[in-house]
Amino acid sequence: MSDYTLEELMVIEAARQIRDGDVVFVGTGLPLLATTFAQRRHAPNLCFVVESGAIAPLVLPTPISVSDPKLMHKAVRLGTLREVLGCLLQRGLVDVGFLGGAQIDRFGNINSTVIGDYAKPAVRLPGSGGGNDIASHAKRLLILTRHEKRRFPPHCDYVTSPGYLHGPDARKKAGLKVTHPSFTVVTDLAVLDIDPATAQLRIAALMPGVSVEQVKENTGFEPLVANPLGAVEPPSQEDARMLREEIDPGGLYLKKGR
Amino acid sequence: MPGSPSKVMTLKEAVARFVRSGCSVGLGGQNIGRCAMAAMHEIVRQGHRDLTIYGCNLSISMDLLVGAGLVRRCESGTGNLERFGTTFSWRRGIEQGTLEVEDYSHLSMVSRFLAGEMGLPFMPVKSLLGSDILTYSSGSGFKKFDVIDNPWNRGEPVVLVPAATPDVSIIHVQKADPLGNLIIEGFATHEPEMVRASHHTIVTCEDLVETEDVRRDPERTTIAYPHVSAVVHQPWGAHPTSTYRYYDYDGDEIARYQAVAREGGEAYRRYLDEYVYGCATFEEYLAKVCSPARREELEAAMRAMI
Image (cartoon, rainbow over all chains, first blue to last red; front, side, top):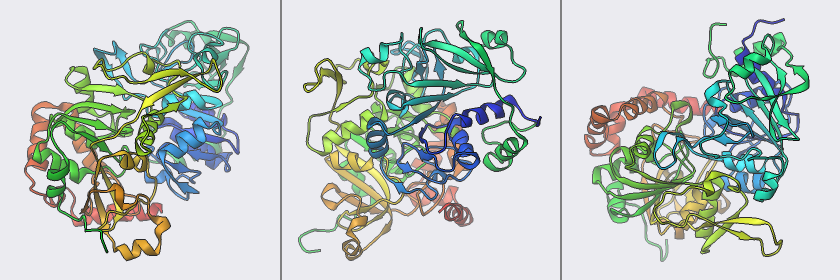
C-alpha cells in the first residue's frame, strides 16, 4: 500500500467516478483538481466543461478558478457562458455535474447561499453560480467535500441547488427535467449515494480505516447505511505520485506534510 | 470610416458620459479573468453612487464599487473570488443590510441578458425549479420570476425570468477598433449577451486595431459596433485579473486587495486612498503595484499556457 492521506484518496476516488468519454461540467474548487487528475490518469477523452465557456481543454495543472487560463489550454472552443450552461447543460448533453459542497442535507440538497435567515444572514455565502444549473440538469451528480458535521446539516437553511428536494419523486413534481439523477458524494470519510426508496443519503462505501460510527459522528443527521457496505480502494503508488507531483505540486489544494 | 465616427475617448470622458448616479451597470469578466478594473477605478474616483450592478459572477470589480460605497443593489449569480476567498465588501454589505441582492443562477442571469439582447420581455429557463432561489427575493417589490404552465405540454412548470437591460455595460477586451467592433479572445463568459442587451457599453482594450483589420477577418468580431458607445485604449486594464493571450492574473495584488477587503474599515479606506483616489490615472496605479519586471513575468506566465 502506498503512503497517502484520506484527503488525497477523496480526490482520487471522486476522479474514479468519471468515465472516459464523459462530458463533465466542473464547478470550482476541488472538482477542478479531481477532474484534472481524471483527465491525466484514466479518462483522456473526457470532455471538460467550465462555465466561463471553455469546451474540452487539456487542462494544465493547477487551475484555481473556473476562469483560470490554465483551463483554456488546448480547448476545442472557448465560447460563452450561455453555450455551455444553456446549449450543453440545460440542453441535456452533460453526463456528470461535478460540484464542491458548501452544505449538503439528508436529501442531497446543496446550500451555497446563506447560513441563517436569508433576509438577515449570519453568514452570506457566494450564491448559486452555475451550481443550481448543474444540479438541475446533469444526468449524474458528483459532489466532493470534506466530511464535517457543519457541512452535513439535517436541513439546509437555503436550498441553492436541488438534490432530491424532499422525496423520491420531488424533482419530478417540481418540474425538473432530470427527475432521478445518479447521485454520489465523495468525502474524506466515505462515499455516499441516494437510497432510492427514501431519496436520503446513504453510506455506500467507507474510506480505509474509517468506521460507520465515525461517519455518523461527523454527519448532522443519521445517514442510512448500504447493505452490503463497500470499501474504497486505496490509491496505487502511481495515483498518489501523480496527484502530488503532477496535479497539485504546489500544494494549492492538498495539505503538505504527509 | 464613412458615416461612423470614432468612439475613442479617454476613460475619464467615457465614464463621465455614460455612468450616472442611480444607473444600472453590467459588469463583464469573471472571477480572476478580464475584469474591467481600470474603469472601476475611474468610477470610484468620479464617485457615481446608488448603482445597481448586473452580472453573472461578480468578483473584484463589483467588490471595489461596493467597498467604495457606490452600490445599492446587485443582481447576479455569485459574488466570489474562488481560491482568493469571497467578495468581502459584498458579503459585509449583505450581512449588515446595506446592500440589496437578487439571487439568480448563472444560466438564469445570462437568459435575462439573452431576452434583453433580442428585445424580448423575458426568457424561459428550466433551472431554479424546486430551489429556494424561487422562494426568496430581495423584498424590494421587484418581480424576480414567474412560473407558468408550458402551453405545449400542460402540467410542465417553466420559469420565466425578466429581461435585464443595463443602462451601461463595462467590459475589458483584447482588441477593439475605433468604431467599437470588439474582438474577445478566449472565453467570452456572459459578455456578448449582456453587452447587446445594454443601452450603452464602455469598452477598454489592450490593443486598438484598425477597422481595416476587422474587415479583413470579420468572423473574428465577437460584438459589432452598433452595440458599443465608447472605446478606451487601456493596456493592462484588467489588472490584477488576467487577460487571455496578454497576461496572467497577479495573485499578489489580488491577495493585497482581499486582505484589506476582509478587514474593511480603516484598512480599506487606506487602500482606496493609496491605490485609487491617490492615482489620477490607472497608469499611476500600475506604476505603484506592477513593475516592468513583474509585467514581463505575468506576460511570460500567460505565454506558457497558450
